[in-house]
Image (cartoon, rainbow, N blue to C red; front, side, top):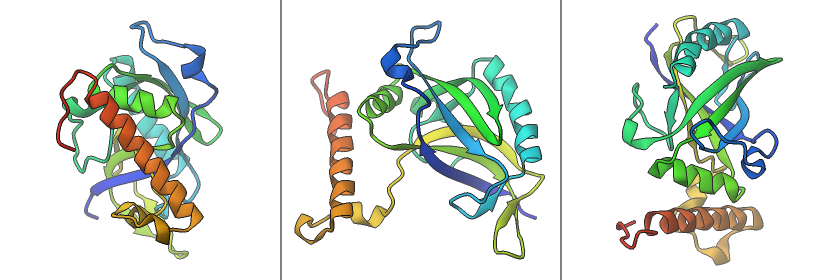
Length: 206
């Protein structure tokens, strides 16, 4: 089977209130923790990862954690490499809780990291997304099983709109209540990002 880039996203719900409690890394950067992935279930993309497969990849990934370079990006890169100019965070601890892959994540003081920190502090919903290379096999029930050739690359943070099309040129008068909430959330995200990018007195064209 041909390997392809596999990106699987789930909502990221920080475990506890680590940012507001002021937990920081040895470098003084804020830490947030939560579920990175779940094994033995059909995910939102219709894919299934066995626990054995995740255990193998987590064991391999720990070398990056131990070497302090388990970095990831903000937003969805369609690439097999981590682009350093977009790095927002570094995973400093990874472990299991039942079938959940858990992580403690250091938010870095980079441009992308500052945006991520501000979004989380303002309770903006973000997703955490595994990025890897692998092939799929369709099972009898239509579920796609990730095969043994899967290779985990990293985890990224991404936006997770329930309906992306509702965020394009919306006419507020024609939106239902749920779409208005999505539009307001999108507007708040844009406002936060603009404030961060313009804080030094020069604003890029957005």
